Amino acid sequence: MSEHILEAATLKKEEALLPQANWFERSETLQKLRKTKKFPTIWCAGCGIGVVMGALIRAIDHLGLDNDQVALVSGIGCTARMPVYMDFNTLHTTHGRALAFATGLKIARPDMKVIAIMGDGDALAIGGNHFIHAARRNLGITALVVNNSIYGMTGGQYSPTTPFGRKATTAPYGNIEPPFPVCELAIAAGASYVARSTVYHALELDKYLTEAIAKDGFSLIEAVSYCHTTFGRLNKLGTAADMMRALKENTIARTAFERLPPEEQAANTKIVRGNFVNIERPQYTAIYANLISEVRGGEK
Image 1 (cartoon, rainbow, N blue to C red):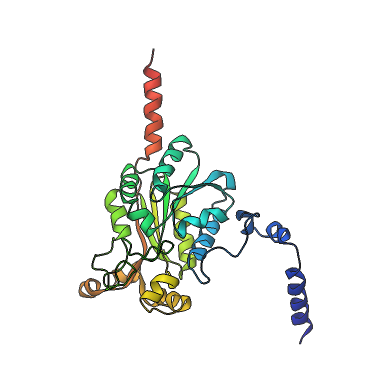
Image 2 (tube, rainbow, N blue to C red):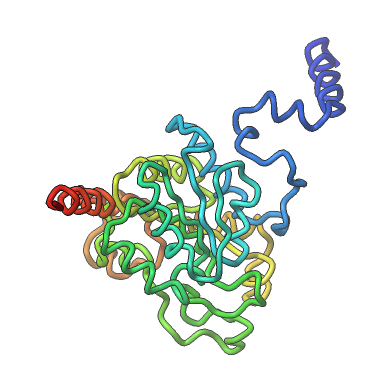
């Protein structure tokens, strides 16, 4: 063993013996995590939600936001546990109501960056109406939807994004409903920024999250993930690593998709990744503040 390799191995061994607090002091990323929480997380080993959490932390770091400038709002589910591990302002609310609470917070504190973190069931089933109207109003909220195609925490029921024909505990013979197109729904409802990536394409996810949080208006990031514990086992899709590789093989960048001939686009079965909308629209809290100012100015 060379001197350099021996030195590196010794240093690594010594660092492993350092108190946990020292790691927090030495790492910018870890400064965004709560020192009082025990790690690893509650998520199953290999779950993609941890990748999304890392991407979110890096996006906030890239924007130079202080911890107190950010509020994370979540509902119920595996994804909704994410804010518990991060050292920002957090609200852990009821199922499907993350955007309702986020709306009130953004109106009360328009200066804050408000990020609603939801799973596909949380956002689009019981929370579907809130999702549509938050986008329609163009509230300055970032909706981060981790789409793993199933209710992972509550028993493996099929969700609004479960692919047609896939099995769930409530669809043992296969789901017969078409899945909700998350990005298309946000676009139709009036979102200012809409993008989709996957937990395999982590750097791409970082970029889209950074742009979404910086946007002054309603922004949606669909982070396509997987649930290897429930969805994967029921549908015999293999291990977490197998499902991660599938995200690489079964997705296509928007730029590449748009170069395909029309007949190939129509026949495409791969998930299209990319930035689909980035427009400027009047933001709700700014309009609301102007209205209040006008009303108060007209009072005698």
